[in-house]
Amino acid sequence: MHRPPALEQCDSALLGSLTVSSSDAQPWIYLASFHAARGDREKVLQAMKSAIQSDFYGNGYAERVSRLSDIINQNTSWGLYSAVVAAIGIEASNSVFPQDVFSFCRKASSDLYTATLCYQLGEDMALRGKTLALSGVGQSLTTMMRNVSEFHLPNDSVVNITPDESADMLTIAPLMKYHDRLLLNWLDDLKALGEKQAAGRAIETVRTLAKSGDYSHCAD
Image (tube, rainbow, N blue to C red):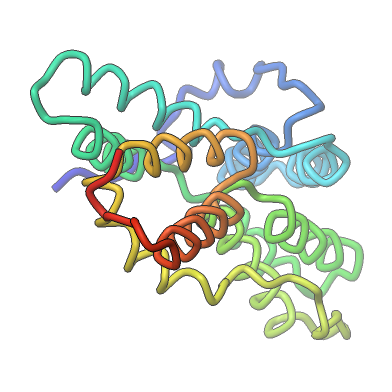
């Protein structure tokens, strides 16, 4: 069975000397996990601070799904919907979970500075992450820190990464198989707005279309 790549298996010389743009938070999170696996506390803390101070979270997920689906669609007879489903599956199989950040934060939970920084990083991921997976990682990190830290950490966070629309999104997703325009709009919104907002707009579009008298789920 295929397993996602583990950061500790990456070449130390490559990641150890890698220069990362300070504008994008996500590479800093990966670097924090890389250094955590090697016990380099100062570099972990610096990477976490850089992530929090970054200007944005890059939406590489959307770009890769869009690019992969275009390649698959152009070189197979699968059709656009099947190409997008395949691209999402490929992206999921190659995703990296920053598990070493969790281990680092759990072990350092008795240090006020580190515990607070870990909590802030989790909240930042949950609030600004462009994918539901990244937001979910952030929510899990904040929850863990509240549970393991001896310090009082906020439990009234504004973070909410379990949208009510998630079940509705699963319901309307099959409609995209018969409605290319709906699928293409979702891909555009995924790149521009992120996964959560893209789902919300797709759901609202279907609700609006369903209220129109001449709506057909097979319409292009």
